[in-house]
Image (cartoon, rainbow, N blue to C red; front, side, top):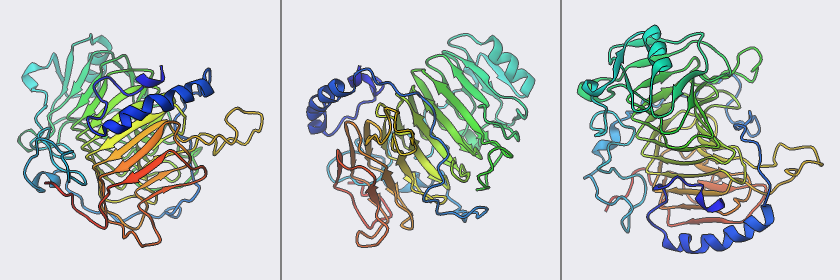
Length: 406
């Protein structure tokens, strides 16, 4: 049902006008599009409008994932009137780490692992409700391993932020297109870990010679949560949400920036996601959607420090790369379904913050963000291209590099 794509409990708690007008739009959309279900493929490589040259490496910003914890007093309501940008909340510091309250205690773990063999054995035997804890001092090398199953109801955890711990490290040096982890059930949680992929640099578009890598893939799953993690070095995507429901929050995504790819988080098909309180730095796109008219996300309370060659928040056009005139998607005007981007802070004026490559089926609302962009500059903070409509931009603060937290 079209009206149930956002995960239960993840509907925004503000903008009652949007909620009131949405059913009217959805009824019309349902009548028009009944029976059309696009394939849930991830976003394809995109080298159009590529601003970073092949082989060029964007300068590191030296961002501190815990810096936002000092921006001001912790707020009970980050969406209160007058708020603009990403304000800290009682749910934890932006980017997670020290001070994050929902850390899994080591003592509550079903099993503690510190090697690849132990981790693989634990996952193969895990049952719903089990907590597999990666020792905080462990470095687990999964080079050569792909499609490692995380069963439904299982939590994979470590202690990032506890006593200064960076969290247990899981890494690979394998350049391969299959994901390292594949979520194979509902209600999986990954928390408190460092997930380190094989490529932090921009590289080139020769994907045959150097396949693009993915950290975590979920397809047709619900209840997925990734929180308080550091995710970096994945040339395709840190997290791929394909026709699934996901909550990704309080994590630090950086150096996911392969030429033509490089997504911290990518959504496709009928995916819906709540993406909040993350710190993004030097990702080609922090958030990307593959353009399916059934793909939705809400991004709020995120801080974007810098981009690696492209805009930060994206929705591809559903038909922008369909060249077969007989396809039902040929020249489709749609770019996603429902996109809410609010109360985020964008610190880089040299690139667009938000770009939609078409018209959302229901609508896109971009408001109460703080942008470093001068509104009179040639590079705009927010832009819609190719097809136009259902696009609402209001109440943003610019130029401004810090949030307004009343």
